[in-house]
Amino acid sequence: MRLRDKIAAELDQLREDMEEIGVQLCLDEEVMLRCMSYLQRLDEMGQRSNWLAALLRAEDPNEVIPDITLQSLAERLKR
Image 1 (cartoon, rainbow, N blue to C red):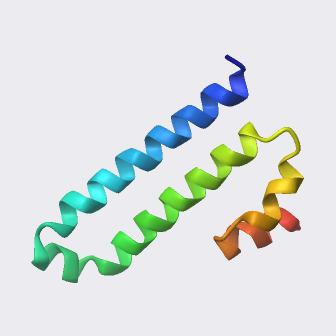
Image 2: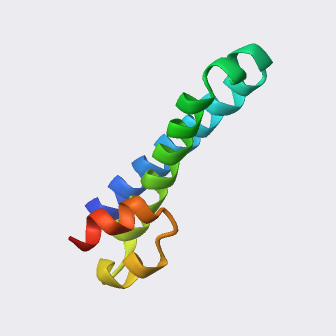
């Protein structure tokens, strides 16, 4: 397995871990309401992790950038 694929797999695991933390925190309605902006940031971090993994796996990462649905990340990568 290439190093880039190993790093991508680690990013996938990070995304899954962040998702699980978010789900667990949302099970408590008070926590969810009080921490909504932080939960949204956690979700964004998971999305960034997902796209970064996709970029690492791609033969030509520049071809992936137009597909990135997280606009803030796509814009940063285009600069």
